[in-house]
Image 1: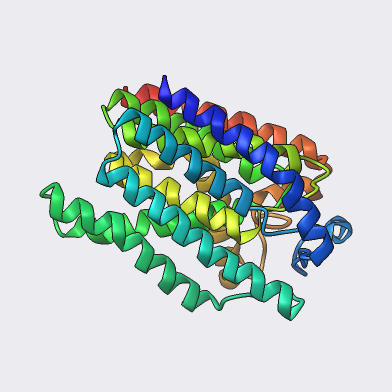
Image 2: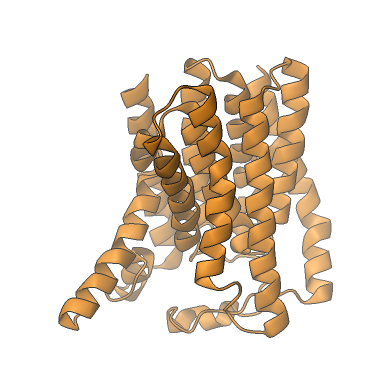
Length: 305
């Protein structure tokens, strides 16, 4: 019951907080600077308020904490998930803030960002090593999963509503899996994040009034990986987050192909841009990817339950 309450409360809080936060961003002109490598059609989005991840993360944290307290399931695992969620949000916000103040699309350096991501990822990885008698290699694998998930969702956040919608299905799957595995605390946190993702679509669906920025995308991916590691289903995250995996692989394939042969496999990567340049409408690409996210989530649940 409280799992559902957590999700609905997060949904409501995100919807309510979005109105004043959007007004604040417009007044401060905290706008997004569009990457030069994006399709030319995206130039019209320049200046759209960003750092919207604030109203995605904080409502989920509040709703999750209240539900955990009411359920009396405030254990160390859900606490660590929430801590990681907040830390990834702060890292992403710092990245977004640098882009805004410098007025270009480059924030924290890639190596520095990766170092901070790995440091946060050590939190769940070390916990699992010391408290579950896991082998030493699991520390490195856990860090890989969390950092990989954080960057994968970040890469996916390139179209209006794409990252929020696909994340919604991924976290619903996590909530179901955690519930049936007896990890009620993690299920509550997952449901809260899913609710916030759904609420955020009110402001992020096409045409987006607000972008989540790295503030939201790094946090969503980071906590998705964290929940998978703490829940013991990190291998299945490749299925649950299948859309994010495909997006990441498209970038890797594109880079390798271009460096090896001088030719590109896709018209542009991540792959959602390839479909755009192939004539698909932006909402059309997003809806297809949402459907894929739903299918991957269902497959992940059926495979684990």
